[in-house]
Structures are given as structure tokens and as C-alpha cells.
Figure 1: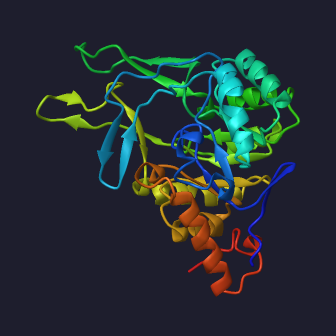
Figure 2 (figure 1 turned 90 degrees about the horizontal axis):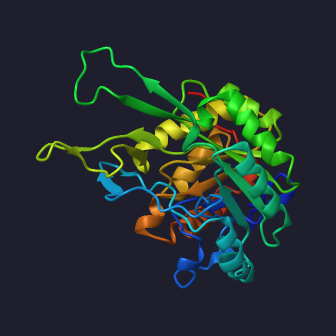
Figure 3 (figure 1 turned 45 degrees about the vertical axis):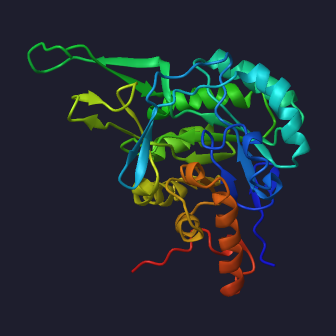
Length: 321
């Protein structure tokens, strides 16, 4: 059989296909429908230090070729996860990557300390690509004052190289476990941000997350999301995501995990040929929780059919026209 193993820092995953954070719950919800132990890894819903209720509904909107989500990181908090969820995940024999988001360096430090001591946590994914309260700026309107004259935008940590490096260093100082920095694709140039994460001690990068978007109902003239804006995911963003993986993989030496609109094995192969060492399946899980396993099985068949002994032979092997 072809060798599909992937090395991320000090850990080796059995195959390169993960269930992406935020689309597979805490994993246990799908244990009756999916053989969790066959996943390359399970990335948990992003956890914060304290429980979080998330955004007001509606939270999901279907779009052509994808969906907008504005869940707002609803989660039970790190302490309850370690106490209530992790023991069962250990029993499931699936590599567990815990996704965390801190609203400050102190948050990240404390969470990384707890996870470093937790048995059954294979790696930590540092979610730097959601709005962060410590990086907020106000945009002043150029037009005359209107009902919406107070326009605000929240900048993500992953929009700034220095902020990204600072957060990664805070986590790196507290753990010897593999550390993955999840970056936003929604920036002008990913290279300096990716390089800052690498210099700060990240073992791998996840490229990327959703693209900010809106959907407005003309009949009500209101946003279809309770939080006004949301993140666009699904097949619609795949070409954008593949490009960013290809571009970023040429600028760093550490592994890149690609995601964005993967539904079939052929989609995953695009990312691997572009330079990704592993992939994560996200939005497809909403329609079919077994999507990551179908992608993995399709990769196995492709490698066997084309007599490719190891997945590494395909990484970054895209041919120019």
C-alpha cells in the first residue's frame, strides 16, 4: 500500500486527511457514523479559556458553491473539554489536535500550559484567524454621517506579522507539543505573516480560514446573518485557497496544511500538488460527516493507480503549463 503518513513537528499522523476545526464538533458527536480512528487527525472545535455562547442567530446561510457562517466560536471552554470530552477521544484512538483561541497572550500562555500536560493531545492548533478584541480599529466614514456612520472592523491577529509572532511565541514557550498556526487567507500578502509564525516557533501552518463576506435579503433589507457578516467557505473558495497554499509553501520551510472547499480526493490532490503536506475537510462535513474518509480512500486509490509509493512524491509537484 502507498505510504500516506505525514510528519508534523514531533508527531506522525497515519494519513494526511483531517477533520477541520469547527465543522466536526468535538468529534464524539460523529462516533456512531464515522470510524474516527481512520482519520489522519481530528481538529476540535476552537476552544477559548472560558465558555462562549457565540453569535446570535441566524448563524448559517447557504450561498452558491458554499456557505456563510457566523457561529462566533461557541464552545464549552478548555476546562470542561479536558474533563468531559478528552477522555472519550483518547479511547477513540484518533490523533487529536486541539484548536484554541486566546484574546490575549496571557490566555494563550495559560491554555498552552494546560494542553502541554494533557494526555491524548497530539498537537495544538493556534487559531489566529478570528476577530481578536485586542486588535480593533475604527474606520471613519468618508461620506456624510448616516445611520451607519460608526463603521468598525475587527482586525485579526493573523492580519499582522508582529501580532502573529507574539502569539505563537507565547504558546511555544509553554509547550513541547507540535504547534500549528492557523492563518487567515484574507490578507494582501501571506508570506511575511507565515514567516513570522515560523520564526516564532510554529511547527506547521494551516492555510487558511474563511473569507469575510455578507448576504443581504432584499425583501427585508437586512443581513441574513445575526452578526451582520460571516465567513465564506466551501467549494467557492477552493481556487483562492489553493493559490495561497502554493504561494505560502514556497516561502516557509515548515509543513503547510491546506483547506478550503475540499469535497473529493481530487480537491485534496490540488492542495498537495500545490505544496501542502496535509489537508483538512471542513464545510463538506455538514453534508456528509464521512467526507474526510472518502477523501482519504480516494487518495489511496489515486496513489495505487499511478504507482506512487509515497504521498511525499506529490507534494509541490505541480507542473507549469
